[in-house]
Length: 514
Image 1 (cartoon, helix red, strand yellow):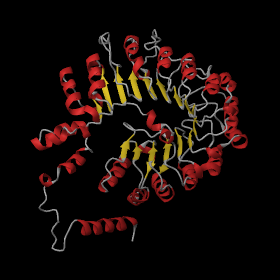
Image 2 (cartoon, one colour):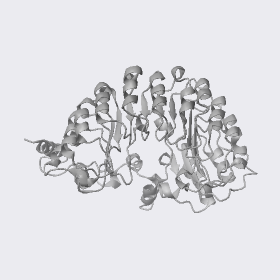
Image 3 (cartoon, rainbow, N blue to C red):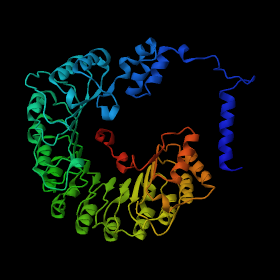
Image 4 (cartoon, rainbow, N blue to C red):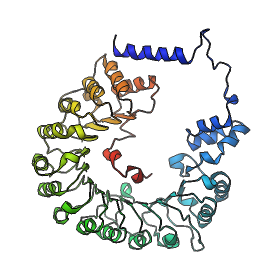
């Protein structure tokens, strides 16, 4: 009997045991939702988005009462583009804060039109347990008047500020400095995706040097895509934030690494350093005392570091559990060999070498053969010479893997036999949680018996929560298979989803921003 028959028989057995009595009738035949107690409906509503909860509120008076229970409104986004919720007036919001949010509120996201001193006053007085806040100034052309603001939520541990390109924030920031010294996680999100190729005048819209003095307890700092952030700002934070564990400056292209030496010397607890898409210079990186640092997680993707610098870095850093070094021309076979011979890859659990075209499949095979059993994340995408042949060799070794990204969007001269891949993944990678196959659908070859391989993957990899494929026939086949098994959210397209090795970072939950 094949696997698909086993699965179907199990489903039929469960159905007969759970849903039908001996006379063929369901024991729930006379049950309706109206007979469920309020606490059960409340629990059901907790799985819905706030937009869906608002729709439930218009069904009947009882559901309206349950929908407005403050327990359902602990984490609230009022940004229409994110949650679909739109508050028509400040009066409505003030009423919501008082009646619906109250002491239960833990997290709130506010768009620019709702960020006023009156709203912030109300949040500070009516929501004493508010610890997480996002303030979205990204679309602002001017700020509200904060001259009369005397109160601000004082128990914040997490704050995310989406910056505007042109609006200076100092007037607002001066008013909140006295209230945010308890912050542990700070996100400043820039306008990286809005930048044009032409050089325009760059404004320092927030005074980082003053901000760092008001936030001495920061553990995690994420400065994402900010065009004015440079090495002096990193130096400023490191001089005052002695508890710093994680610093991310991804896509801050003015960062060159000139203050890396001071950062590592001061921040003895710094374990995570993310510098993707920066302008790091090899001489500055080599000057830093990596052999004395505590850094265990490093992202240097999209930089221009030389092979000499990479060898120096990887052979000096004592304990490295996460390395993202994709899109670097200098990362080649000699770097990988030197790291294996003179470094310490024995602690590595995540490796991302996306689009590292100068590494051969032979060198990768040697490295994975030696260290693959300890890896939890492996990203070898964006390289045309890494095909299913290499993956078929290394997949049986990746027995502890949780994240895999493979394939390239470029059209290949050969074809990828995806049934064999799925079968091998299902057989050996049972701890898998996230998988992405980036290959062009035209390069994927599968047979009429592909359902068996997909069944094996679905049944064996029970922790799989995200499977990303390019739109095409194979995507539709896999999606239909998972949906028949009532796992409707697993299969996704590369249009709206990408898999990243970042999920294994120690501070991943703190680094999430929207």
